[in-house]
Length: 492
Image 1 (cartoon, rainbow, N blue to C red):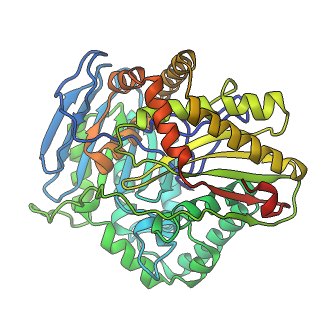
Image 2: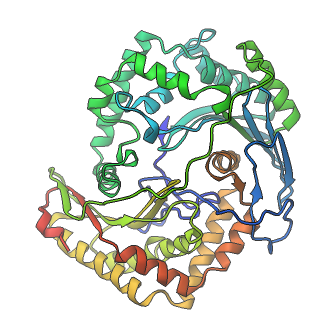
Image 3: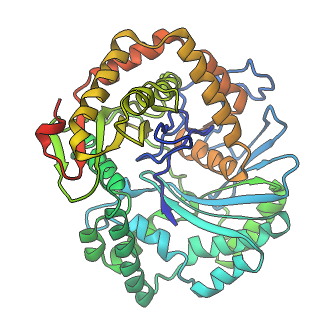
């Protein structure tokens, strides 16, 4: 079980974070999500020249199309309101099934803070039919993997199983999502587990500085709250508040089920309807489906002051950045290229300047996170206290230089190749396909296939990257630091 905080380049998150601290991808603070505005929809794109998404109208009872690689996509809205999307991947022998709730930590009301993450734990702790051990055994006996993630805008419970065991996964996940009991003893026991999890995160200064940065960029907004809650909110929230959050947001018309791999759509529907009927969900009509999020831009007023959380340690964890763009913004493709060039690998400007030329940091990378109505963009570095001021100065110099002159044509072409490889490799896992379906349904109502994504990346120009850099970097920046350092040392 995890909060949704990893961020590496993938096909459905085009403004993904990048790592230049090592040769492998590094974590960043929030999920950057793909998006599209209301583009003209093609019903069956089959070549790499098609640059438009497949539409997923929220009220359409049936939708079907085939992707460029031969994968068959089908979407059905069951009579009870559950939305089901499948992607049959040729040659797959396993399937990943996810049950999604369209609410995350930003949707919690006063007195419920931390409830979404609490539920992520509690739904594995027993239903009226199964104990926590029964749930664990159900997946272990078939060699399945089960887990969950909580984000700021959604929650997902998922399992990866052999093709022969899809019905088992559907049955158990349905039971967990619709009929958990939130046993009082389990509730108090899990409260202690979550407090231990938060304490573990607090011991990681990189996690702490990312949470601090988010709170500063999204100051006064629910997006700025930690996904997992705080120790105070977890201690304060009671079972009644979490139960109310659960019952209000896990109704059939809220739930989206996505499955990818060796999965037959009709067979999955039949198994899901049996599982739903076993829990009394037999409605032939449903209320309004949970709407997709409003795109109205969130008014942001980031804190421009340097904010330091002093603590002992061998390093200062530094983060400099500011507001980004929402996930539907057409410039997200240019942002992907910008992000790759600044901090996306060993050839990026930040890696070369901070690590290779000056030896000031082991880990340095840029990242971009986006939501329905806001986004963030920034640079992270970890360095020794005596180098923190120089690192902050160099980062700002690199950012300012990029905003002023932009990238070269050769840099842009290199970044396009880097992104094309990362996006394509990301689709080698059925879990990524399942996640892509869920976010397409919940976030935008459009599914971008590989040729469309690669085509839009290929169309990015140096001028587009330069203009976006000038806008993002020209905004008032946020500086957050954790470690043995004073604010004056890392101020601009």
